[in-house]
Structures are given as C-alpha cells and as structure tokens.
Length: 427
Image (cartoon, rainbow, N blue to C red; front, side):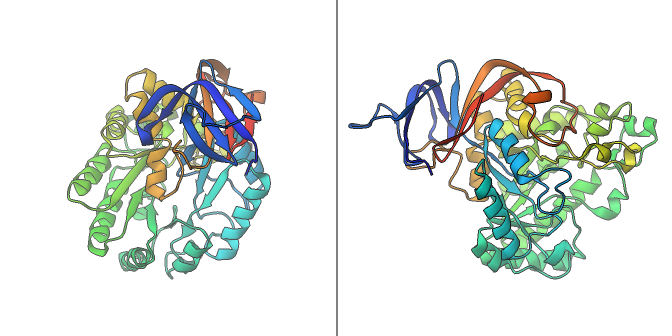
C-alpha cells in the first residue's frame, strides 16, 4: 500500500460500476480512492499524474490467466507475467489450478500469493482445484482452500471421472459458498481434435473438435447446477449454441455466468490456415456466426466478462506438427487494445466494453475490484486511445510470444497502471 497522496488530473474517468463517464480528478490516499471529482477539503497531493487526452479506468480484472509458476518456469514466471499484466492495465489475475504443483492445498495457495506479493505488480487470485490433483475422482478440501483465499474452484481442462463426481463437487462447493468455474469440454467427443469441425479443418486434414464437445458439457453442467443450487461460471465459451443455452438458463433464474476469451471475438477458423500453430487454441476458433454470437452475448449481458485466457509458451511448444503443438495464446498485452477495437467498431459501447473487463468479472468472482468507488483500492489504469504501438520487441513483456497478433500495430495503449496507489507501470 502506498502512503502517498496522489491526484490524477485531466482524464476522462470511466467507471461503469457507478455509471460514470466524465472529466474529473481522482484522489488517492493510503492506497485507497478518497474522491472522484472535486478535491476533498484539506487534500494535498504528494504526486500528480497528468491524464490529459486519456481515459482513467479501473484496473482490469482477468478471470483466466496462466502464469506457469510453479512448475513451468521455462515458459513464464509470476514476475514476468505480472509485469506484462501491469503494462496492460490488468491489476487482478485469476489463475487456474493446473500449475505443475496443482492448487489443491492451502500451502500452494499461500505460495502463489506470497510470490505475487513479493513481486508486487498485480493481485494474483488462485483458483482452487475442484478435485485432488485434478484427477477428477476425490473432492478437494474446498473449505480449506476458501480459508486460504480462493474465491472459486475449478477442474480446469482435467475431465471428471463421471457425472456423479461432478454433482458431489457442485454440492460441496455450494455448501462452501464457492463459485465453480467450468471450462466446458466433453473429452470423449473431443477425441484429440485440435481445430473446429468445419471446412478449413477438413481441407487441412486435421482432427476436429465439433460443437458438441462444448454444448454437451454445458447442458450436463446446467442440469446439475440447477439441481444442486451451485453457482457456476462457464469460462471461454466459443459457439453460438452455448451462448443460447446459458441465456435460457439465466432466464429461468439459474445462477450461471459466462465469459469469452478476447481472441474468440476477432478470429475464426480461417486463422489456422497454413497450419499456423499460433492460432492453435482450445476451444478452437469457430465460424463467423459464432464469433458474432459471442459479441452479441457480451452486448446483451448474457456473457458478463472478457478474459485474456493468457497461456504463455516457450518457442518449442509451437514448433511441431500442428496437432502436436501446445494450444494457447499469450494474450495479456493485447486484451485491452483488442477490446477497444470492438468498441471503435460499434460492437458494444465504451461503458459496456470497460464493464466486461472490470466490474463484470469482479462481480462474477465476488471481488472488491473493478471500480473507482470511494473507499476502493486504487487499482487504476490510464489508457491513451490514440497512442499507436507494435506488439513486439521491447514493447512486449510476457515471456510468451505465441500469439497471431505478435508484430501487429495497435491503436490504444496503457500509459500508467496503479496498484493500491503505487505506480507499477509507466511508459
């Protein structure tokens, strides 16, 4: 926490949680926001930040970002990826439990939090494992994980042994008051597929992933969620039918939410043409109609959050034949610029777009983040919508360069990021 009094002047303050879009000053004391608008009586700033020509927004909250530590430090570390997050205006990172020391005990939760606190670039929120060792058989000690600081539990990509285990897990999580995050995938139907079951995959002769891989898993989970009363969040949806299923369940009052990865809002199955391994993602890029349905789901509020689904890889992970390469994109640093492209294109308005990156994901996870409310932590990003930059070289901080957007030029960049009133990134 910072002991400095800071005032951010001259910026366009956008705080969807409070319905605010106005030119105003933001005052910070002892790491907290103390005023938005006029300076409080007697407030004396130790530091002033000039936000002229920029937007002042809450620090972004990312519901799915893999930092690779512990266990895969050859790919990335908490230090490298939280530095990339700070440069992207992301101040809170929710990390899935499938690290190489699975997050299924309070000891691993504490290890991650301590290492993140030591680096001090972003808040790291570990998501606990739904089952021991992510084996899909025995339930983890969810109450212990909650006491250690987990707000949610998940089985990540690991399959459950059967639906009875999933039902018991949902019941236990509901009793513990924990959110269950589900990456919907029926492994038997996936059958080692790696691209969408469409024209491009067929032409390239690659094993495919049909829609049913996702929709069957969504359907099963929705039935069990309704039966158990568990609060369920679907992560990284990829197809129109899944969005419609979530919307229908929400209309009946089922406690279900969903998000989408930012790259799914831009790319389609054609991205893998030429066997581009940087476009190898799971779930796969699908048809333009699916991309458009995901965009519409965000605009209407069926999908409440956009995440990065950040998965940094070492270079060798993308050098084999396409099916043998590892899926995933390093996506933290392109999260806000890609979202801003959609805002400029009129896919959704500015307030909606910022909400899906801040207060929307914070509300899903039950975090006191994503807002510029008085009394909130001063987690803030200054975003220059006119500043152009290239996603490469010294402008790229993640250890992973595995993205189809590497080398692209973007309009819009974070110039400064504050975490608890401390400047943790500045151009």
